[in-house]
Image (cartoon, rainbow, N blue to C red; front, side, top):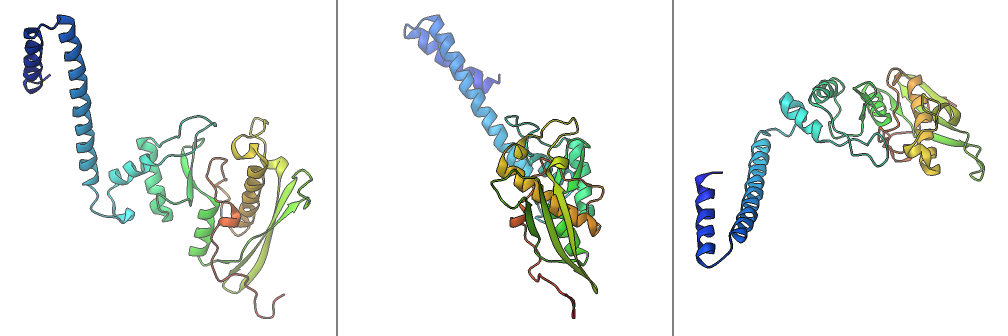
Length: 254
């Protein structure tokens, strides 16, 4: 405790004794005041640390940020918990550096939903949104995906989702098709039912549609080595933004 803090406390203690206060009251008030002073000092220190951290940002373009700064931002991003009710997860320093180099490679913004972190492998991977973005960047022009529930009657238990994705590059046009079966995706590697979104009917429909779209993207060369995780925060396919010039058909096509 510094002299600047100790001397005022002694002066207050003497004043209490001179006024007829009991030693126990002197001790209690001294402890209370010391606690208040410590909280105030901690608050000031946190504010100074925040100012020092923010002062390092002289560039808003994430590609031009120094690696330690970008890693610090990535560590601040919260990821879904391992289990419902668990705390949100954050990257370690090493994971943040690995992720930063991966983002540079694929040109994905750190705050986007184009990627997710696979906690089983310890590596970042593309989401379906990222695969769509990558395909457009590399010249593919994609139509709006069309989905079909199997069976179509929603009163019947869900079995699968079919996705058809029109895709055009150079002079090649084709509609890719994939059927994602619930029995292939709804169980964990241990053979137990998956939790999270898979545990409720609406979430199950969404997750299966994501896998159906992912299956189409794999057919045009995206995502063979990067599976879609159950905690990847996937955007529902109906909400994914597709290139506006859609529904391509070659001249004289079908």
